[in-house]
Image (tube, rainbow, N blue to C red; front, side):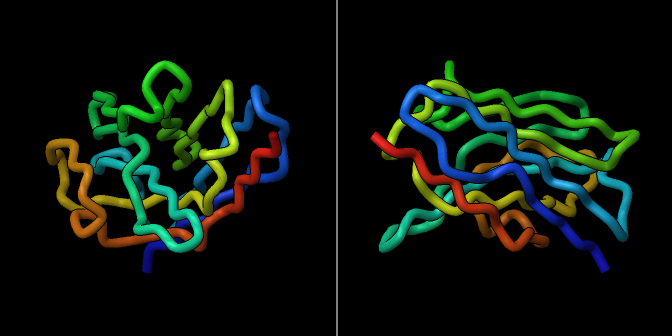
Length: 125
């Protein structure tokens, strides 16, 4: 059974930075894409960024230029570095595993089979 555990969320002032981590267990993630999503109160879950098994990257427009997704396969962990945070970035952030081996990058939540419990990011103005 795959388990994903996010960490690194918290309260930060606008303009600040956070680095989220997602540690996987139960499966080696090196052959799979990993995605980051977020969900604000009253809103649908939305795509933030993803990294493929080969290191290709894709970002939502809201994250481009401010966020960097990376992975450390030796640690079975993916990261989301977020800079220049804004109050509208406030949400619960989730990491997710796409179980299609060597697959293309996908942005739809339904493409990802396993999800973490989420970590809260709150940005104050």
